[in-house]
Length: 333
Image (cartoon, rainbow, N blue to C red):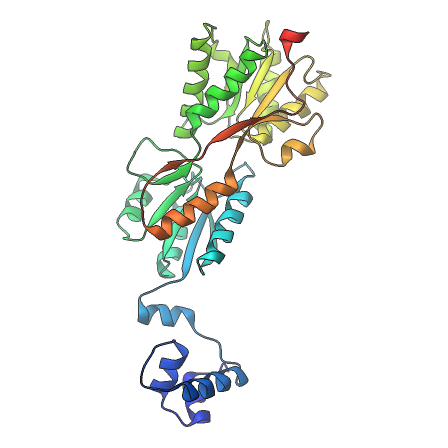
């Protein structure tokens, strides 16, 4: 059986109240010699502090819940690394819970688990909560931040990239490389404000350069590898295929590369590809993928810092173009 405070009290001869005060780092009612004797006994007896019970009594928690959406993308790891580094600096512990965008029951279970743990705050990574679950979160009185996701509701605090800017930057980059027939592939427009913002940036860049847009150039999907393969199949069915594609994620871009290889289509000589995210996957494939790279690690650090400061203020983290090997400059050929 695990060692209890009562066991330590019996061993040292002090009262359970005194032992409890020492082990919970309260001041007063005992001297340094008493504290040293109790802590040594606790160590010798293998005592382990019951964190949940302590938090119940003190109404304080050093734990932050990170709820992660089980998406088809792969950037969560970098965000979690940033959160973990910031947590260590702040002497906080992280627990990770998984859920799904289109599974309200799983979302509610993750939220309930966090509440039952009496966490100090909640970070939600690319989680698009069902309306009922969002109301539960708002009414929980627990500080929270969304990370790497945009919302139409400006009152929801989030740390994310400017997805309108991402759509614009990717399109503008391809235009400046001489491309005019530009596709946008694998983005979710059904219930994702993130996808809608990227499409708006894409449209605006084409309009600013007085270029047309064809509805067939936008191929929706779920940001997955399969969505990339399907998108390229559809593009190649057009009489005048696009010359460049903006992939909604790195996995979409890899799906396009795979399908291009199967169709004997050379990248970038016959089709240019730029991806959104810019994770290490871009360097693992051949040709390596040019990307609009998001600073996911910084998002993680900033989100936890803001959460613990209880600022409830949204921030955009800048993105940048990282040139690799998958875009052809048509102006030089």
